[in-house]
Image (tube, rainbow, N blue to C red):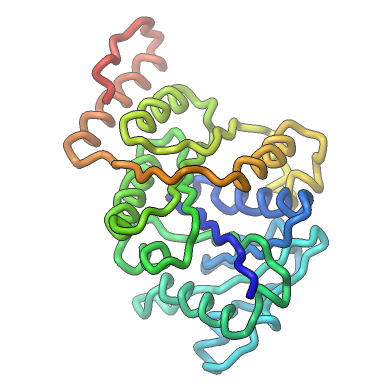
Length: 290
């Protein structure tokens, strides 16, 4: 039985997880790998850049209606070669999305999907901000091999990222798992310097920094990956280079996320640095940043 590497993208809603996951999925296919991307957002938008106007029937919603489904009927092979599967959502106030991911993973194994599609990578684009027990289940129970936490220069997305990392670390304290951070809009001051300092303090690996690219934004608005709209752009090159970083096996070092008091002090100084920058203050002392 073939084993595909399972990578999940986590982070606050709106930080660009789906855009990053979709462009990475296509970059992996262009590098010769077989890839399935799975989204669990209620809008079915995780894979929309890959499948375009092809309708996606949500597999979990069909499962709840029929209790027996063949996953192959819900997997879309796109023009790029990336396979796509949308899980759909739950009725508000009922059930757990993370349990849905577990159900799908079990079905994939029972129905031999990985072998049938000869998959090398399964990319999970996981919706949700709060790392409750259910949210952490796919990481705790060994479904995922690598967790990539996406954040940007906003305080709220950073706080969410730190909380997610803390939840994973607690759930996997006896069995290390690869946790890495990908920084979106990294050229938005003072994002890079602040998250560099955070990574050093917490022993967190930063996978890469994605700067703002207007062409990437335009491709997303056009409903396409960057490889369709601007294949020779710097943004396309970023995702091509990201493939090499994703596929290289690295030593696993579990990070030590900030506690509440450390986090509060760090955020206060980050806000001060941002305020000084916007006010034109030069040479502020931020040595107590972390």
